[in-house]
Length: 83
Image (cartoon, rainbow, N blue to C red; front, top):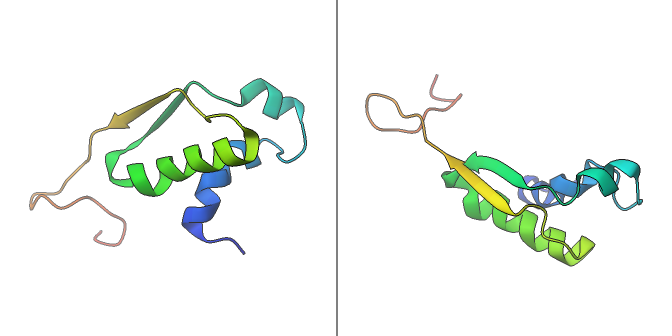
């Protein structure tokens, strides 16, 4: 079983069949864009880049689009646990 943050670093290429040289891996890796929230920039995106460079020799995406954060009336980040 992999840790959530560790396995997130493998996501861009492991979902495409890596470590095998699959048709999907050749067609879709590396990609051009990752869309994510700024709050997980280090935890998720940095790991994707480091793991991609280490295990495939390529940066998994060339651009990162950071979307806005939805907040409640008190300025807290909206979450499933808060309701």
